[in-house]
Image (cartoon, rainbow, N blue to C red):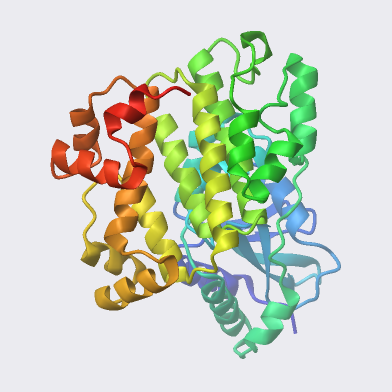
Length: 411
């Protein structure tokens, strides 16, 4: 029953490749290749070779003649069906890889840490995942049903495919948890990672206690205690440290109750800001800002049970403080009617969208007043206030002092 003619399987493989964009392979039980059909495919950057990858995905104990799905991680999966050749030798028909999620800058850094891939291979890793066709999990299940129908000329219930599949990430021989990674960094470079991944600080982020984080990170550590993860390139070293710190804080915030979409979006914003700079003079200040922002967001999430539309609107505002934000573009982003969003926002947040935008912009302006030498007019222009007068009036109403008074006030 499970013996399929080679010519038929070859034709099916070509058909599936042309219509899904997914490579198709037949492999032996040890993962070695029998045949392959693809127009373009990159080597997998997280595994030494495809044979090693396949040997960890497909097993002799798998059932014959039923399709199933296996994942390497949260972003990539394969379809498999166990068959027999004319000599009754078992082998696997394999479709994939395909991506179940579109990778972002934040998710690439998550994978770098998860699999301990050197930071200099970031572009290689990103290139690999960007090259994969992207399909939802449900679509992949439908492709598995299609492959089964073409091979056996019969239908199969999607519930059975789901029951036989595993979406759990595949352990890699290179995979370590963060604790082990940081321990290894200490052994390799005798560095001090405590100020980045200090358990108490992560606990404060999870609990939204940003005032205590501000106190604990009042001063940067001595220069000799700054970690080294990328030798001979201080800018790249400091950027990598900041990205690692932000990624860890992102996870802590999610564990603390912050919506994952908001947390990852915030992470992407910080990482994009870091990578866009040719130099990177303020490692500690960037980490401190990220930790405080995450803790502040967690505190808001714990205090207020906002609806997804309001949460997404707040995140959009935060990510576009340096642009003019119109109600309609905000409503379009969260897929809600503008009038309904305005009423919902006022009801849940206790202030209008305009007032919230002003408060967020003033909060951002305070950082520029404290840490930069930009003039008040330049700060007003950066944050898209109508003019300097409008900025001063708005700032004074919210902070009970003018921007100039705030800048010169004693700490």
